[in-house]
Image 1 (cartoon, one colour):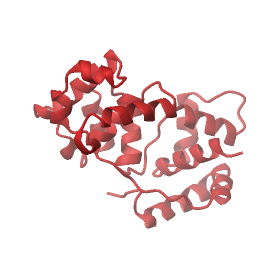
Image 2 (cartoon, rainbow, N blue to C red; image 1 turned 135 degrees about the horizontal axis):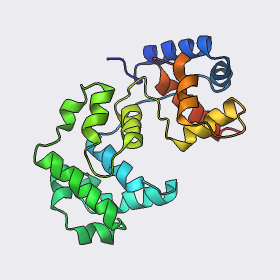
Image 3 (cartoon, helix red, strand yellow; image 1 turned 30 degrees about the vertical axis):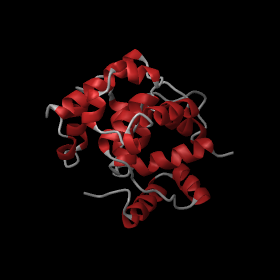
Image 4 (spheres, rainbow, N blue to C red; image 1 turned 180 degrees about the vertical axis):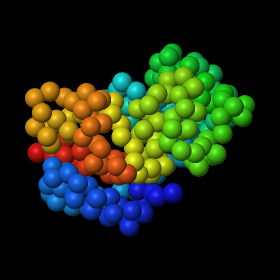
Length: 207
């Protein structure tokens, strides 16, 4: 399976995107090859995604830091999180709803209902289907996991606000594109939609 962490794969993706999409070609030329390395463990990444939902970057980081401080070495492990009283999570700033999500996730892993290790070998669709059963985890969370933790190469986060803004800016659209428009544009990006996404995020944040 190809990985975004493989420089050869990344270069192949850049060449493909540059040849098939003139707008992306300009963005790639401007920013050069992005240094990217997938990182993190699946459980910790999912916990952080849940904690960061609907929060600005700084606020999300603060909550994650406080939750990690509850555990030795800051390690987020299924068993310890499952055993943590909700009141303790609440004292770290976790909302009641997110505490419920964290308990559902850790419970499924501890009880063997969700084998995160085996999911690493599953297809994108199988991964989406398996994690969609967990409270508080939807397509956006799984897409972020696929790109930033698992390094999957052909992920298209159509619901991501940053992707929408990046496309609007790159293609000079009057309005942010809807899912159908994004999927139409992305026909020329496959099988490297993840790399296109990385450049669109970079383009969104550039002057």
